[in-house]
Image (cartoon, rainbow, N blue to C red; front, top):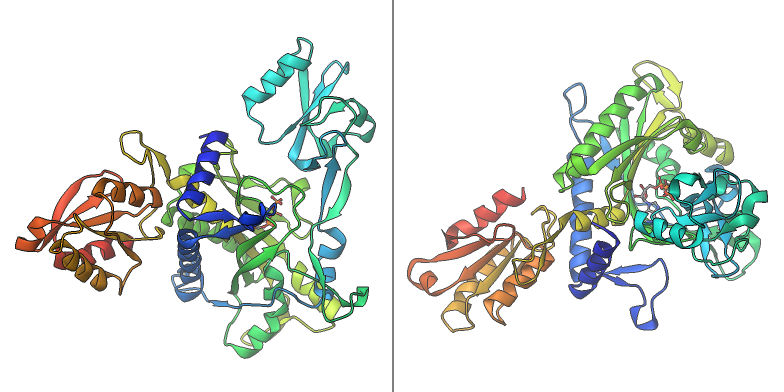
Length: 497
Ligand code: ATP
């Protein structure tokens, strides 16, 4: 897979109605995306599976009993003090550099620089996802006979300011056009009420977890939850990313699925391992093989200010391949959030353990993932090139995730085939998202279902009239078998479980 694969995936997503650029008819708006008829189904399937596995039927804990997790759905706009407490007003910054020549803006921690080992001559900056072949060819052209081994690699945000004059930016031809990194706060803000003064300034949440911490006391007071337990939330988050890119991977408006797991400090190591294991199982269950995942134990110096340990679950996205990029972060947040919100709000956020008669502030383990980034992983993983079939490509979704579980196709638009197909369709649609597709020749209809990742096509033909059997065509193997119409529902049910 390569950058070209990404282009093909983006094109398929638009052609078949998964994902469109937001405001497409106005030329789009960078970093914002709309989900089409199939994209919204896929996204809902992933969302519902997460919610089921977390809140409806949470996993069995290390002691053999089901653990306890409840859900919330908090407001996107909260009291702005909340973002001072969380550290976002002061510290949610990305280092950004501008290029005076190309007029492009970059995140300094997303650009690397090749600096000559001998200290002589020009340094070259590249996007962190740049292809090796592009790097080599640019050096060949402009580095006066030097090759990659004559350079040292350093991320732009770590390069001393005095060296900037000798760097050629990723899209520039002359050295010295990059500005020094400036801190840029990524929170979108707005004004609440009629007056647009600072006292009315509020923020769109940059992550969903704050709404969980703000409701910790409400949940404990109103429900029978006892530590250890979790609070889960799915919803929109907004970040004014310096460089949105890689399709929906880094957007300015996206959705997150976050769990805050509250436990005693002594039990943190056990629960941390538990959550890494559970989250791996989840990604496997929705169709991401473990071999395509990488677990990055984030180095101490790269940890967020609140975290003493974080594991990034990374996926081999095509634009990062053969490397990986973040799909989910599992962080030990300590008691940072509850303590901060307690201080800033003046409301006690301790937990009282009645059995042990003690008060304490629970520690938190947070598995946090992007729903929309997860959708991208599912699409990339499902994307399979197969020159042997008319569509040239199919989406190999895990059946439970597929936007349509089955398609019902009368072989011809003949009078005898259509009513039987309609009957089957009316029966199946009570239980699953199914397509009834009558028009066009059967080959074209199979091709369409392949491209949208429908795992099974049931075709009504002349034999159906005499013996009530239909053909079932398997998306991946294209093999066709006959089964009785009465068995179709069971067949699909067994396979999407
Ligand atoms: P980065 O350092 O890459 O900007 P992050 O480590 O700050 O991201 P988190 O704050 O840990 O990201 O967010 C948790 C999850 O939310 C990420 O693992 C990712 O799946 C998702 N996410 C974060 N930012 C974005 C974004 N701009 N677009 C889509 N998903 C995002």
